[in-house]
Length: 379
Image 1 (tube, rainbow, N blue to C red):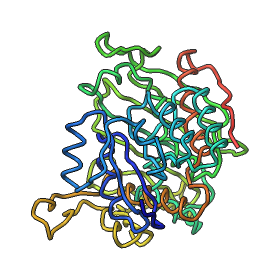
Image 2: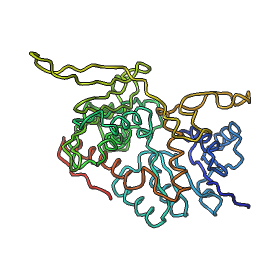
Image 3: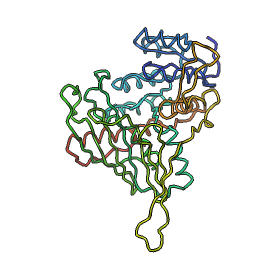
């Protein structure tokens, strides 16, 4: 088979994975794309929808031989560690959906597998490529926020009706969407945690996990920093619409993610103390954040928003893009370019570990009624 200079990628897991197929197909540094899922009907449906010829129903077929340079793993959480280690052991670069793993032992397995293989591993954390995060990072880099004072993250989502393997899932084991943007903005990792569980899971929502909490809330101390960060996670029995959000407060400005869809985030600016007054007031402005699509190749830049996929083809004129705050094209671009440029990706194995393990430790604290847990660091 003739080889071009492009990256050859296989996408494994076509539930959420379908969202990434067109992005790889359109990326200018990709040679070709394959898809894989245990559900043969789904493979046929997605393959026909996007015109993908290379199709598999077993990950073992993807990993055998040298037909592919990289694999994007989007299988259920319980398979992440197993599949990622297998991809790396086969000599291929690996991107993986979050979380990295659900035990510290599996996190360490992945780090060791990456070091042995000397191939790229990237945890595809959406929250650090959303338009909101990129906007706040820009404010931080410009210095307009001032020194940071406090950070808060939340992920509230109702999972009733989802596949049975989600029943009783410890909320903090999926912490990365809420914690990663905080650690990225503070440019450090979490060193200690107190966490409390709240509420009681109904018997029909309990599963194989040692967890009885529908909600967990934690307070983290950040490493070599005066900062604390608060994170709340819930997957059941919490009356709130879906939310993945963060808030950052500095000495000059603060940012809060929008509370309801389409109302806009809020930027607060602390005003000077007025003569004869007690306390400073803060002005507030609704912010509709830009896409930062200029950071992307033109072939995929427009998919930071939901747009017609292919207006020239009636069968493919459906709307596509915009998922998770416009982050998906940024994730694909970073993973692909890290391979092309021969460098570690932004969210490499050690970064992913430092964003994942705090949640594992937080759940351990919740099981001990808030006992202080020291969080291991990875470097």
